[in-house]
Image (spheres, rainbow, N blue to C red):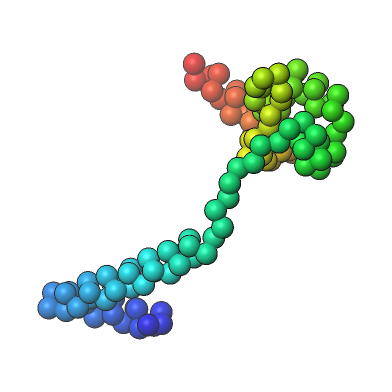
Length: 123
């Protein structure tokens, strides 16, 4: 059905034609569900990956040195997991850290400052 037909069906639904309209909607929902399941099945399952220090240095866009990463860990700037005296980094956490690490624009900082001031006035 195209959009025009949907509009016609929407306007033409009466109490007597309601069961037919509901059946058509149920059929369309089933088709949408089938298509979504097909797309979901075709998507690869993403398995999170653990990095050691060298893997992390190679993965990060700036290719930092090991001492730089040690400094980030010491200062609590990067998400890290420690186990048996080794540093481990979860790729999903590193990706999130990279995405949230962008610098804010002056407009974003201004909005944040305004919100902060308003919240302090309300208290």
